[in-house]
Image 1 (cartoon, rainbow, N blue to C red):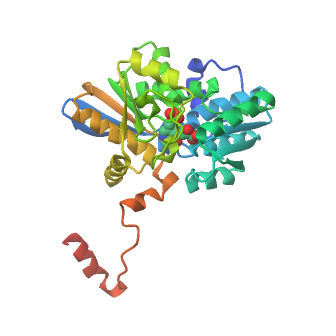
Image 2: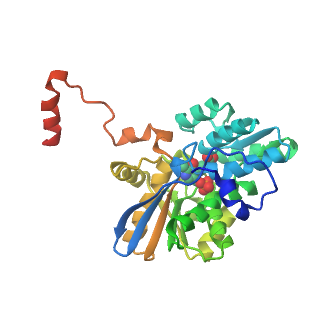
Image 3: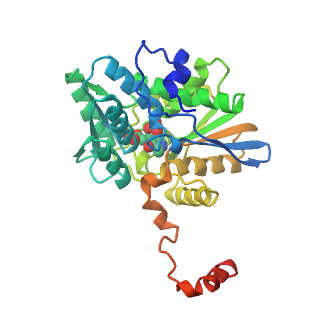
Length: 341
Ligand code: AN7
């Protein structure tokens, strides 16, 4: 049953006594994908959350807290998924939502989602980092507007539930966690989630896209490119926390090129798992780590953060999306040709 994350994990969240704003988030599938030598590879399908991404874990907590504290509206900067999630939870809570996006850089389905939920979308000329700077300034000046980006500590508290759920799914601590990194909130939240449970931490591997990999390069970037628009971020707000997570868990940051991201997306999809490019980056990174012998043995979990339908344009780069035209009376012959090409 989907009781929502606040009801499920309230004892770990440190929340005041509030009424949860929930859409039944969490409780996502943990799929045993493969066994590579002595690594059991698990995929956590965060795209199965109510708005199609992991952001719902943090948003249920941040929006519940914002409403409890008397906010009238929420605001965020976003590459798309935070926007969709904030819009949905604000709608559920009866609050207004304002989402600020880098103009022309967000996947269409994410904007459609946010506006369908009733949010006001504002686009700025500039990148995600400038949008985040702008909304931080607004939220500092207007106390009735709650900032629900991951710089809001309640967002990260909520995203810690990803770690709790993995412990529940596996019944044991995984040896490694591999996840895509953009603004660096999620990797930090998982690390703190595992630590809070006092059962040790997995090795944390943060995967970035080449062209948008400030944590691999060790410096902020002003011009960022990658096909994975969700993680097209050059100045990660939680960089310090992410570096701490990787250092203290003896993990690493890695970056993968767009070509590897597309290939990983295709490989997952052909195995029945359709994810957006940012999430495919995690799988591409997982394969590199394995090939270079960097993965520990045991349970290795990759967090597939967003649903493939979020960015349905990208697969046209590798899939035949045009249907094959056939005559209805010749259907059986046509099928025969595809079975034995
Ligand atoms: C699918 O929605 O930053 O490192 O504004 O959508 O915690 O930022 C999204 C990020 C990975 C990176 N996968 O997580 C936003 C936004 C997907 C994402 C990330 C994002 P963080």
